[in-house]
Image (cartoon, rainbow, N blue to C red):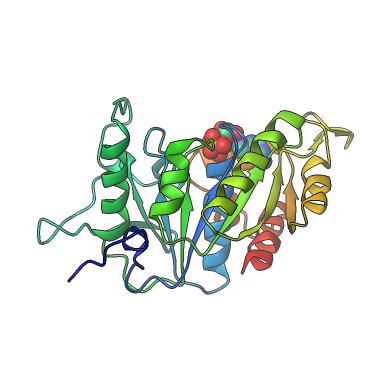
Length: 260
Ligand code: ADP
């Protein structure tokens, strides 16, 4: 097919993919990937056809979180068949390189890898492709946001000031490339002691909600710091599918409904 030129060219839509939502965070370790997986599974439970593009090229988490191993097939040697589990399709650099292989590529290689994972994959008909963005708001992330035809972005942050400051940078990044921010999720917002029920605000509390209000953004919800969330996502059985009637799954479903 003929390629258009100009800045729109890189943002050409992906055939069959109706919307693309990025999940981003200002810094690493705030639970961006965990949130991505569970929101994607929640959207799938709502009856949507869903894919996950793991754009975290240097630290792909989706294979482990979705409990998928192995390599994608390519029947024609060009187009990859996405991997799939729990009814959600997924493409990740983690399927293409060994888990302990460090990625030491430079920017242009990362960009071409991202384009391939976006366009040379038989995604089929998707209502939504959820993109697990690399952490941070530097040039690399800005380029990615520019290269993928995003419908909207969700920002994940812990409640502490530092994570929030970084989340604000993420917000500004999407504004720069004219991608609407759908809202902010506060992750690890409270720890409830399983023995006595006491609530501890380990990373402070309510910061993301306050900040969302101040910036006129939607507050999509808060997720507790919860051992079941960690254990299930680290073992490839995310809580939305492994404990579908639990409070955690319900909270993720509520977030997904606010996004959609
Ligand atoms: P990021 O993508 O921001 O680097 P991850 O999603 O990989 O963060 O999460 C980092 C670690 O924290 C993982 O071990 C994950 O299981 C855990 N984690 C994420 N969110 C929660 C939560 N709400 N409660 C408990 N553990 C969490």
